[in-house]
Amino acid sequence: FFIKNNIFPSMFTLTRMDQLLLGGLIAFIEWRGLFSSKSIKRMASVLLILSATILVSITLIYGLESTITWLFKHFLIGIFIFSFLLIILSFDNKIVFFLNNILESKLFQYYGRISYGFYVWHLSIITMFYNFFNFNFFFLDLIFTFLTTTLIAHISYFYFESHFLKLKDRFFN
Image (tube, rainbow, N blue to C red; front, side, top):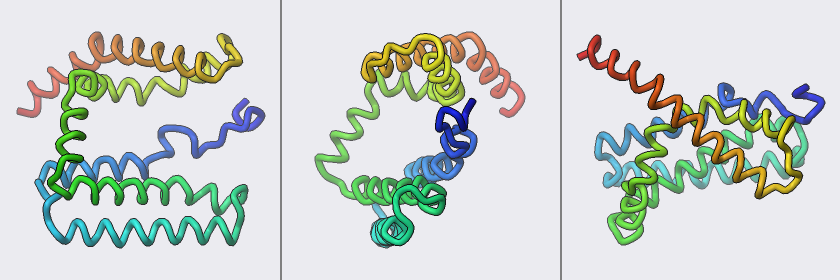
């Protein structure tokens, strides 16, 4: 099924550990309050230039459709975006204030709460829509899969995950 429909193992959520690691690293840097340090800015600038250079080089040498490009492009794009975000977040200016206002909004807080369920269920829901409810109109498919994934993630969080989170607090406090 997957190969027949051009779905590659690199598209599965459990094989995207590199992006999960980069997201966790950003959260750790924020948690430790290191965004304002000069070393973070330097490291991010080097990573930004290095990842862009490697990505462009691999693409020019092997082409867009090669296996080598497929293997490394998601990771390098992740590092590029990670570095870019580090640079943006390390400045104290209106952009950071604007981003903080957006990220601290009730909508983003809600999606942060249900994000694990969103992560776990999205591939199954996309596959289900692709096989049973395909409207053959990209934006309509996107809206319906997004809303269905949000609904399932909401149910998953409030009826399952929240109870296990309470158990975690009881056993690990």
